[in-house]
Length: 344
Image (cartoon, rainbow, N blue to C red; front, top):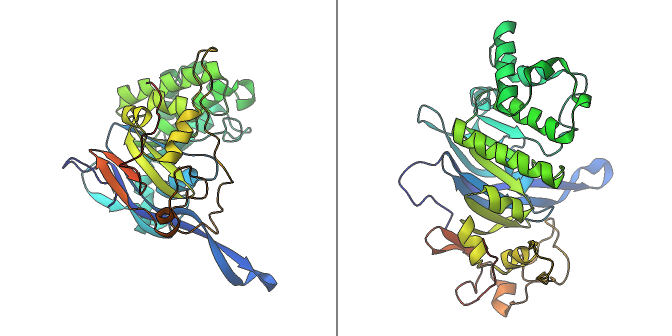
């Protein structure tokens, strides 16, 4: 079973059995194909219009690769990415040519992780935020100036800043500039790739609250990529957990934090810090190392590190199944395990 919408309404984005493999070559002139890195391996999820889906997991699990496939920064190896246009028609992003993607680009934009490296230091704010407007047909400079001023005000920056360069701003301000650039083309889906991980904690809260305000004001839909579960808990409606290129669990945020059903999800939950120095850390120490996506183990990819492993886990890959309304998990023992969550 794949993660499918429970209602009859067509989701804004419906990803089905997505795969992205990177070839490994060896030999003289690297001509011999010796394997593949399975960065994204049979991933399915959907995002309804107006909601925020969190895509979480430790570094190297494939969450950023999956998001870049959605943006078509990477061409998927296989699978479908069904996107609903503003006119109600549905297109498969994975099959579109470069020319076919051009009219879709304005509807799907990205907020990058690094607020320093993602801004061209030789461009002013007017050029950075106004470039998407120019590329989408707004040739009149006066119109662009008015729109850039509006976007800067929207993200909490003054319009007088538009002739300044990125070096004049702090990390939080730079991320606001990146958000303004992403919103310039009036997108319907915004992919936020760890947008606050490079910022101070106090600034993180400001940016997260800004994203929530903009979502309510502009009716945005977010695919929120992160590894910080405290951030995910604050901003996401549903959460999808990835491990070595596969999805292991998906549920509404409150349900996932309260009662995780996959041992890996429970281990992640135990690492969420509690704002009380008297509370002992509940970190679960997982044995072994994360498997290589170029040579994953047989059966369940998590079985070499799982404290609840049985023989079946080593031989048979678990089915990704719905064990409660809207709660999907890939674990043979999900029905019998009682795993600890965290308070919301």
